Image (tube, rainbow, N blue to C red; front, side, top):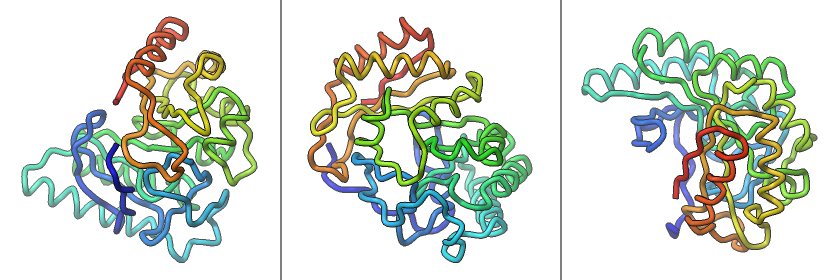
Length: 262
């Protein structure tokens, strides 16, 4: 594993960075630059512990970027990339926490789509989300307008979900799965497996996880383990051989493509 935690992203738009999954990806950070804002405090997070651990970010508008600023910064970045003949394959909502917590997330999505259509029509819009806000209909509908919604699912039940992801909002594992089911297969699931104080890669845990995937029926699954030192020192990466075993079980039982990133 790499020995350092990732620094927080500075500013609204960053990159593009080369991604194995997304090609040349231009990142969009709609969270604060100074502190991580998230509805979960995942013990494996590469950005360390969550500074603003919230389920509703409305009262933090003063430190969040305005929709117009997001559109302006994206326009500048895409114009610069075009002048330098740098291809942008994807525009990805990521950054310092959970992007869908931004109170104006639906409006930001629409403005990003409009800028993309004008300056980089070949780029896919992606959102990396922890799946905790799907009960909000406005957020769900905004995510459906995104080309590639990549949603987190690290567990097959409430116990491991709470121990590993440590949500701050009043959301249950069942509510998350029900929200993911509403996509009717039009999403990608991203799952990170660990060993140690919390273990989500054992036979029983994986069995429950596969049962949840059968309900969700995503179009694809991305499987990971730790790459950098996590926030919680009591966790360890899962060997590649076990990740490949999980991939085979998913492909056999759920009948969806799965890719291991190790």
